[in-house]
Image 1 (cartoon, rainbow, N blue to C red):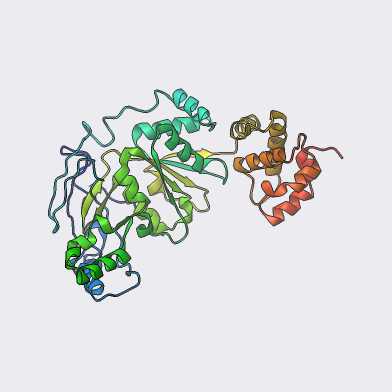
Image 2 (tube, helix red, strand yellow; image 1 turned 90 degrees about the vertical axis):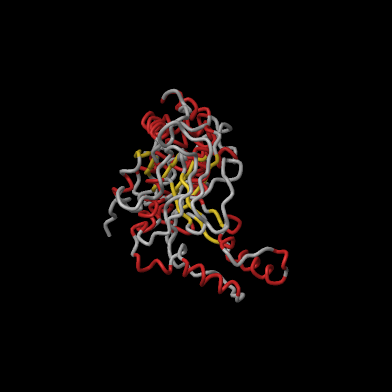
Length: 403
């Protein structure tokens, strides 16, 4: 399957990013052709009148269980949280203009860069116990300056996910994590309706006249919306760091959906309205390269490959992450891991395993790494049975012992 790039012309995913009127702007777009989908399917979509009427009939009849998923959410835009310049919506919809603080021009403008230079960023990362090379520090700095997602690829355990965690801590922003896996779909990433709560509200309205009228559009209001990571990140805007972890585990369809979200940082919830992030969140995407990501997605991102560190840098990382480990032991462990990676093992240990092994040996009081110590703690660094058998046969070579 070839993933085609989402066109920028045609039906728009909103009414302009950060232009003129406020940090958020509502636009009710119930167009059947929006999101490039077949208009003949519109009567079964979540935003259609047919779907809502059918769902209300089920709720009023007291049907149980989960609602069938009849169509994906559409991209466009929805309201901010309370206290962010949002005005209340009318119960029956209609275009509502929301006002709030807007940038002077363009998406992401109006806010100073958090770091004066690449060197400043690199020093701050080191203070947070993350030791990047110059290329990675430059990529992070450019991603923040250009408001572009940063795609990080590399072997498992080299510190890709940690970049997002440290970046959120450095910037004082909320970390929002979307963990990808086989079978993930747009609902699990964006939003769902709380069907159980809707059903309870309908039953309460039937038995208690003071419980409110839940036969109309308020059943599909913000109180019944379950916010998933992508919607949370769009609403948080530049107050968040969005981590899309292990994207290579997801399928092509989800990657195409994600491509469109990252293009506009916007989504439409037909029953409520639409939102866009005027200032987008910082986005870190990681991949272990179990499959190739499509070029269309890569074109939306800055790219950096994180390799295993050099021996000296790995010693520094172990000392920074596990300061209780003496430098001599950290060096012996790093040298052993370097030799181990040179063997024909199926899963080469990453920096995370080096740190775990050093901490395990230090906990056991080991000062000088021997073959016996390595054999006893091999499970901290080698996580595959066949690999362990191979390494055990060459332990003296791994730890640098002479015959």
